[in-house]
Each structure stands twice: as C-alpha cells, then as structure tokens.
Length: 153
Image 1 (tube, rainbow, N blue to C red):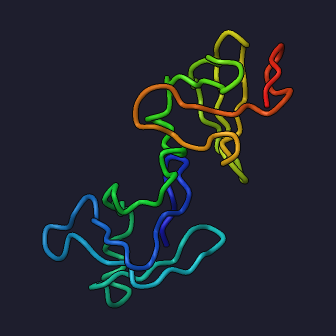
Image 2 (cartoon, rainbow, N blue to C red):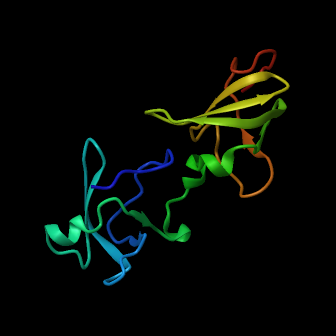
C-alpha cells in the first residue's frame, strides 16, 4: 500500500520507475510499478522484483521516489515547500501577495496568499491557476468577488 506524502496527490502509475529510500543493503534499489489498484486509504501497488509477502514487507516504512521528469504535468501545483513565499499576480489586479500556506482539500488545494488585499484564499484549479512557472511570480485569474475591493475575473 502506498500513501502520498506532503499534500501530493497519488502519483504512482504502471510503468513508473521508483527508487526505494532508504535503500536496503542488499537487493534492488529501484523497481518498476507493474500494477496499481486505487483504494480508500492509498494505492495498492505491485513492483517488479518484489515477489511474495516477505519481500513486500521488507519495503514497509520506506519511501518510493521517482525522477522529476517522470512526474505528471502540474505536480508543481502541489509542492507546498516550493510554493511557500512565491509571489502571486492576478491578470487584472496585479500583485496579490505571497503564498503563506497551502491548505490541502478534497477537491483541490487552496493557497493562503497574504498581501495588499489582506488574506486571499486562491483555489488551485486549472481555470484559476493555469500554470506554475519554475521562477518568478505565479500568474492567476482570481474569480470575481474573491478579493475585497478587487474586480477579479
């Protein structure tokens, strides 16, 4: 059973190469995901080279890491550590503020942005946050009425 960490959505998929951390002294340090079943508490996964309950049990409590290039587009929207402190700029209103907190929600995350409009809660949805550049301010389209004193979209 795998469980996503740090507010990330489930990212494990068939064909993904993963690396076990911390690695075992002996045995393979990477595996390929051969099967994924979605469950209510996480994803049940099968890994290449892991045959049997004893081999699976040896992986308990370890992390599975993947190469950044193998992650899906949009994963940066969920990386709270990298988002904190980033500036947010609306197309119409200009500078909204900096991300102070990332709240993880069942449908989408919400950024708590503090700036000249006070605290603004920005829903992280495709129509509001179309992209997250690796550097510089994050462009958003704040919905109408979300910012006090701002027209929004």
